[in-house]
Length: 312
Image: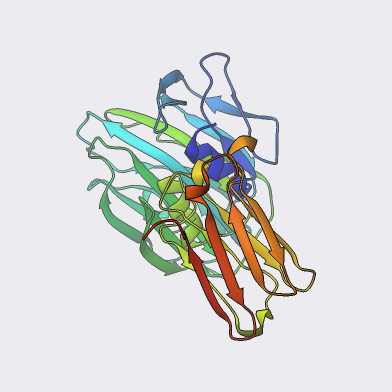
């Protein structure tokens, strides 16, 4: 499983087309919904995707998700690339229709306009002013596109960055409807990878993680006076997800764990703590002791330090 797929899996999509297949007429649904995702038109399978270990597909048709896109909270994500063509007309990117009150079936409601900009303005009981990304996604490069909604707030993200926010109608519907994803017609060759739908709003950090293939962009160490909060996290997301280290602690039970959740067991990190003295040590036993990391936390002063004592 590649880095992008690992992050996607951890976020729990409802419907997810990895687009890895090279045969058959439908795609596997790797989301919690299960089953398969059918195709309208023709898809050329096995194309080179954003993740070199996985294929994408170049369609003259659309994927058909059977989902509930007009719920109170939802998200669509996909990798997209257009090569060739002149883009003489805007094209729909996602199409769904329940009634005249609940629909996204035009370029302004969810599509790519003649300037190559993504637009989003779904109708939830009443129309909303269409948002525009102002980022050209028809430049021949891979782009990550994400649409999110929670309550009456809708957002567009391009390549992990929030590009616009708007206000939708207040109505909702949990009706399941065939939802068509992909530019059914248009100039050039349109290629997709890792297309997914979530029954929740993805946060800005989660969208960024789907773009980068890791879980964040900074190292964050948080310490709370008196150790009163039971959940803590230490994460280095600037390296690949397979090398990330996560630290969680429940001081009420002195149960702590530090681990690299996707690496092999022989690279695991053991964490040992003595809550009576608040002195603890994190060691990777599979490598030399010169790489040991020592972590000391004085709960009474909320002063913490993480150091490698064998280097300057």
